[in-house]
Image (cartoon, rainbow over all chains, first blue to last red; front, side, top):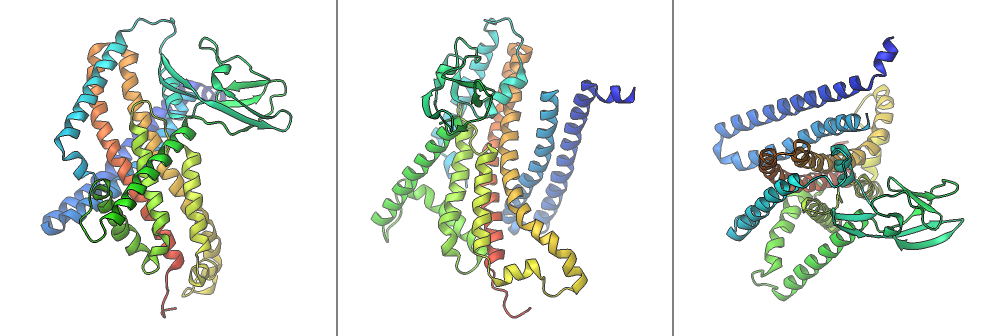
Length: 81
Length: 342
């Protein structure tokens, strides 16, 4: 009965939805931390704010790619199901 | 990097015009009565737009069939237009012994795969990208020769700061001395990815850099250049890491060998995911208007799509920068002069 339950496609799609939400949370936490330390660095040393801002954007893009990777997998699950 | 382009008033108004036409066209499209009574299948539309195709589908009524070039040992080389595979919106038609099924061409009777060298949408985008790169950079080079010693003019004045940015911020700090040898590859890589990303954002364009085969090719180039230029210090660090105790070296050895392959693999996945996921998000938001079929949702989604398009422009530039930066870091590690410390 458990096996039949696991084969139910709707649970896969629900899992995909939960996964996409968790990926968004992960991206939010990561970029939030980067943004927070960037703000702190800029407050401590305003003349370095240009460099800090550039580094922050690049690292935000890297973190976002990880979240989008999870998003793409969740989309694939929900589309194939 | 993007600042000089968007600072001009005319580009700002052009953007607003494009966006408003997008809003109105999505609203108008939402009102069109369903010509076939099938429900709107969002996932099919999205995947169809993101993947490669044998025809170029600009709009429902404007479809450009692209040439199909297949080679098989049974039938030899065959070149024909892909419109022969379709009749009145069905693609069950076989032509000349070939069958098109979800973008895979197989022999109709045996079902075997054939060598598919067709000009598909992505290949056509690749040619357009290459032609654009050639045009832009030959004119920049001509301008450089003409303006030798004077201030740059024309297209050269736009691209020269970006080229200098790539040289001074990406290549020189990471590769160190001998960086000139790698500058042509780095510049080509950066501008190919940048133009490919930006071209993919235009309406009706194909998803060039979001095709994993294209990003795999770029990653393979970086892999080959890194490993063919590795000096003794580089290979020494991989196989027999200096400065660590012997048991640890045996442990580090397989990790480092896998690391040779995971580095270009991560380059490939990063660019592919960033661009493809961006396109999927944009398409999903536009499809919202069609799923709900209401004007209000159309207007709202067009506004959100405008903002996400601007983010995608930023992502286009950043992904080009990140790919080039990681490539030059890997090459820098391969050619690094380790000095006297080991």
